[in-house]
Image 1 (cartoon, rainbow, N blue to C red):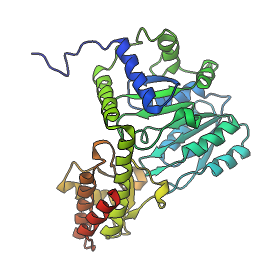
Image 2 (image 1 turned 180 degrees about the vertical axis):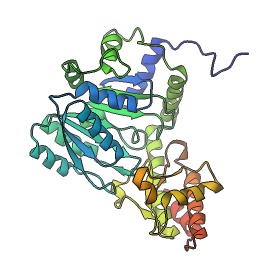
Image 3 (image 1 turned 90 degrees about the vertical axis):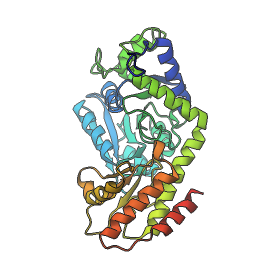
Image 4 (image 1 turned 135 degrees about the horizontal axis):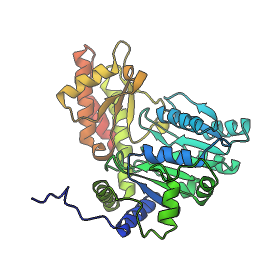
Length: 366
């Protein structure tokens, strides 16, 4: 018996290259794009290990847990790392980056997360990119959560290594990702004797055996299901229009913030300033005396499919995430999330107004 998910014809190099070209169009980039067949941690780590080493001095911006991870990788590579940390309820500014680069003028690598879905903030990459470009450092960007929810423009922003993943605002699968690489970044990798080669982490293998070879022969057997799903995801974004998809995510974020303000019960946005809040996910601070993870578990009992989660690690006590991305960037997902949270708060004896929250959310969406 044949099965549509099992009996697939081999994915050709030509089709693989075509999907990479569609990713390049999504990013409006003329840089080389490599599709990496694994979750986005694969190119995120691969890019750092390829471009950084004992001679690297890195400015690592921390606005959430992924920034902390990048610093660990950079140190493991032997780089000298200067962390620029800001509170997770805010965003970093271009002025802060400029000051840090002035304090450490030897910096030649800057790492930044665009939108931290885990903490709900988003950073002004266009302005920061201008500062990094003036300084002359290589610019590494994690745009996994932001792509599809807000503009991601590696060429316009001077980003040398831009990693995206399909599983959030793009509404695609978790097992495939991509990275755009500037010529400057390729040169840095080629000059790094510690860059991975003949390794699943190796970007240089893709450069030398795939791109330089005219994209005629793949390095290994493609992950067909993930590649086809990525292709379908890109087709859906193209059909709707990227501007429309981004607008839907922004509306969802505005609706959640407005709905929470009207709901009552003590919930409030974790990221104070709306302009610093990511359109891909809204984080909420629970009132004193409540535990976020317990409140989320209570809300999910009525609807396990809700896009709700508690914060990770220590944040599980105080933070709730409303993950309104991809198929959940809809008024219905916002309404259901607010309703379930309102019910959970009411069961704890707190006063809430679900109908007013619904009206406020609808008004913000419009």
